[in-house]
Image (cartoon, rainbow, N blue to C red):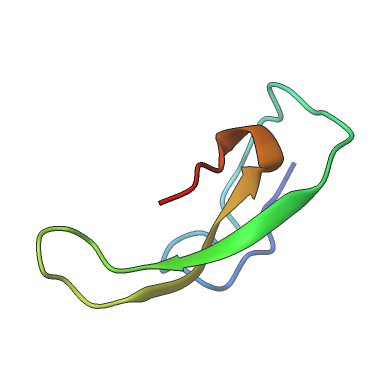
Length: 54
Protein backbone atom coordinates (compact mmCIF):
# COMPACT_ATOMS: atom_id res chain seq x y z
CA UNK A 1 0.00 0.00 0.00
CA UNK A 2 1.10 3.60 -0.49
CA UNK A 3 0.96 6.05 2.43
CA UNK A 4 -0.95 9.30 2.05
CA UNK A 5 0.32 10.77 5.34
CA UNK A 6 1.67 14.29 5.05
CA UNK A 7 2.43 15.06 8.71
CA UNK A 8 6.06 13.86 8.60
CA UNK A 9 8.66 14.39 5.90
CA UNK A 10 9.17 11.35 3.68
CA UNK A 11 5.91 9.58 4.55
CA UNK A 12 3.72 10.72 1.66
CA UNK A 13 4.02 8.21 -1.17
CA UNK A 14 6.13 5.73 0.85
CA UNK A 15 5.37 2.01 0.60
CA UNK A 16 3.92 0.39 3.74
CA UNK A 17 2.78 -3.04 4.92
CA UNK A 18 0.00 -3.52 7.50
CA UNK A 19 1.25 -6.13 9.96
CA UNK A 20 -1.63 -6.09 12.46
CA UNK A 21 -5.04 -4.45 12.94
CA UNK A 22 -7.58 -4.26 15.77
CA UNK A 23 -11.02 -2.75 16.22
CA UNK A 24 -10.66 -0.41 19.20
CA UNK A 25 -10.69 3.23 20.29
CA UNK A 26 -7.48 5.12 19.49
CA UNK A 27 -6.18 8.52 20.58
CA UNK A 28 -3.86 11.03 18.90
CA UNK A 29 -1.43 12.57 21.38
CA UNK A 30 0.74 15.67 21.68
CA UNK A 31 3.95 15.27 23.64
CA UNK A 32 7.16 17.11 24.53
CA UNK A 33 10.26 14.93 24.18
CA UNK A 34 12.28 14.43 27.35
CA UNK A 35 15.40 15.56 25.47
CA UNK A 36 14.03 19.12 25.39
CA UNK A 37 12.91 19.05 21.76
CA UNK A 38 9.86 20.81 20.39
CA UNK A 39 6.32 19.64 21.16
CA UNK A 40 5.13 17.01 18.68
CA UNK A 41 1.43 17.27 17.84
CA UNK A 42 -0.90 14.49 16.62
CA UNK A 43 2.01 12.10 16.31
CA UNK A 44 0.98 8.66 17.47
CA UNK A 45 -2.22 6.74 17.76
CA UNK A 46 -2.45 5.08 21.16
CA UNK A 47 -4.96 2.46 22.22
CA UNK A 48 -6.71 2.71 25.56
CA UNK A 49 -4.55 -0.15 26.87
CA UNK A 50 -1.38 1.88 26.13
CA UNK A 51 -2.50 4.93 28.13
CA UNK A 52 -1.50 5.23 31.80
CA UNK A 53 -2.39 7.90 34.38
CA UNK A 54 0.34 10.36 35.37
